[in-house]
Length: 326
Length: 266
Image 1 (cartoon, one colour):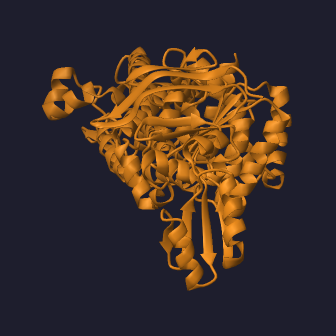
Image 2: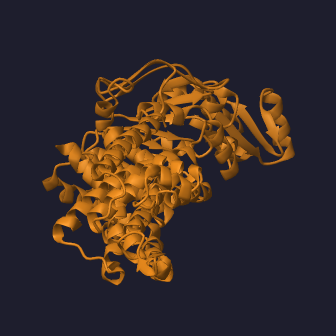
Image 3: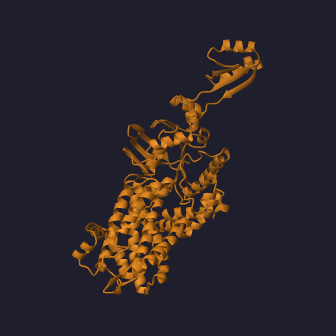
């Protein structure tokens, strides 16, 4: 169960030149919750995470992790943290085991626990058989899993996952979420996930929608949907007569070919519609509100078509001051 | 105490990566072979002067013996400056972030890294030592230990230098060109392949050799490193023996400080 705030952001601001990346962010992330940052590319999600990992320093405001200020006490703040970055960060000339062992050593995991924990996390992400293989030989999905294992191996209280499933096939994505859910059952863990896959957000306790450096809304997935989403009814009438009649009865219905889409004002609407026209439609679909809709309502843009291509992502990386262009 | 474990991990990673890199190892073997066998043996007969028909070595050593310590320095130079490529590699392939978000202070991250580079460079220096008997260089255990100490001191400073370069050059290709542009001039002007004749006074030296060259050699810190190593391994010094240690230690501290300053800012 989520508890007291473990990450606190106060008036956090960051800009790159004239571009505002984060604009006066105030946010509490609670202990033991799964928290999602949802937004299109360039919304400021990664910037936010990088400030929390103290890779970037904020221009204004403060951020604390477990009570430690990320600017003034970065080493202590980072001690509780496991991070999975958007870009891969494994040493592919070392073996799977060596990567994890390196990580344990720099995170000061006691020697007697190291072997045991490495075995545990490898088990969790189903990479035990690959223990002594060079990372170079792993597929990208396996590398991702290894990175997740690595973020967990030092018993981190908080794990940041920056687009953990981007570029992976549906199967690998489902698997990664499977591991994370499994882990949250086993031990106390705060997850902070950035993503632009809406369906992944549904797994989280709370969602923060962020766009152009500002928080647009925070709430549970269900709460956001009931606040910003709306139900709609899609029907396909059996013939042109029926179509005409229904269209006349519901002037605010939108028409797409032979399909009618109408807003649902209350819970009784669907029943009433069926009672009257039930025998004159061949398809009847009640669309429940989705986060996609919520996002559209809040930002006026669809999230999906903002999914950037590889090239756009590289450009965005460069604009953010990506490290090889600096 | 726990932090030392982290330094150990970073050091171990550098060493493992270097030992797994075949190309680097081949370079480390072929370079001294070329210098000692071809250059050394080739120039050996010319390294002497004739006074009243009597053949004398300008320096009381054969050319092979004379350049042998300098070849060690060359191998260390290449390896330590090259080891800084891993700084670029880490940045380019994202591994740097893994280290930067860990609870390790940046100073120790850098220290571990430079220590790793130093170790590899000293190992490459030892590859040259294997050729000692071909160069007619014999030394006792005490000389060897002293030599190893000097090699480590030198490698530490040079690895720091490599890291400084790597922080300024952001591509692999650029680094290769840049490091060569620094290594070779430094090496050639360190009295490594020719002696400043010790029989001559300072004023005479400036007559025999052009003034500018002597000046460069005297201002080149590497001159004193080569000299110190020569002193340790073949017992021949052109300058005061302590000078080499002092210059290397000073350069090591200063270069590490600059590298750390860069690394903190990055």
